Picture (tube, rainbow, N blue to C red):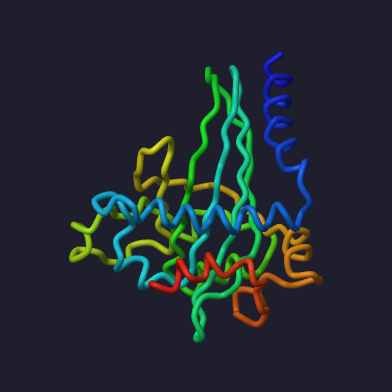
Length: 219
């Protein structure tokens, strides 16, 4: 019974992605990424410190939905971008998912920003396939708010931030697996593309990525 409920929960998450085309799904993720950055900035005392954003080599931005009853399933989609010599790269599609156990009920939507502090962190996403946070790719809850600005030092390859139902926090998500979504990238860019070329700035992003690039241009 428990396995059945977890399976049905996972199907609930996946069904939302099956109702739109890959091109439209990617467009939605890109627009959502821009909105997430804007919402994280909206409360200065809880925002990602500007010094962290200015020093970032890249950003992974995701919306993660968790649903469950007795067991739980979670799934998330989003994009990763990298800083290049000519500004920010176009977005590359990413996704995450998994199952959990324990007494849980209801649904929860979280917005995640993962700040990539090092070239190695960006390279992990550029290689395509799966990226596991933690281990060699160190991950830590990021410092929060403008009051942390003067004391910020880079202590991990990635910093993670979460906004859930209006609550902001720096969180640790060690062990999370994030995958490149090549099918969405191909649909969005109109041809087969490699995540490495996207994040190196070698692939011109579509015009509808401009809002995200404009939001990032201030950093």
